[in-house]
Length: 340
Image (cartoon, rainbow, N blue to C red):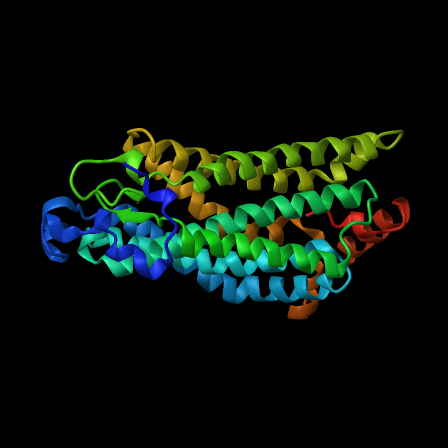
């Protein structure tokens, strides 16, 4: 039988596909929740709480951060990419945290409400793949800047972002979506109508995204760190590495969340997975979209300074003196200074 992934259909035609016909067993509705669903108040409650905190924080923190990135994007290409990533993260949190939490608290499976579960899955899948490809674009941009390759002009960066958006919309609208399943406490390509059928419901483009794009991004982050160490060598090696410790922490955190979510979601959609592993995979996915504003605000000096200006907060005299000393002891700032 031809796998579902080989049959490219627009999003509005997928629910009519025979492989997703719930009525073969029973018409869609609460019967499916009673028979196949399991209410998950704890994990569901966490997901909603995390989503609400993130969205509330986005309004308080991410909006100033986004405005800061917008100002920087006028002259530094990497912040244009980060700005688009911010938009993707805000949308993704609604799918993989807030609506996911609501669904598993109520014990939903695909056939409880096919269209709603479908919509949540389409958005979640599309935003994940969009974030993956834009993270790859971001780290490539940083490497080019550090190596003084003037490839990412403002116009060219915009063109790349448009291409990554086409990539994101392809996964959102033209590949099989991923469905929330309260019993398994995760999201799967198999709607679990009858016995599990992983071969039929595998999504190979998603697998390629997770294994190639995400792993390539992690590899480039490692390369980024190596380049930083090499470029900051010499007499001031130890001092300069210490000054840029935040860059390494940012890279590590972003890599960990993305890689764990990537590998776990590939594994559990091909092989039976321990419920704890499924939870860790989904938690990593949530963190990969929700943690960046906190990472940027805590560790990114440029974003911190812009937010202070936007909020009217003055730095204390000690910080000002420290910044002045750092500026006078460093090279002339360039686009390469803004690594993350």
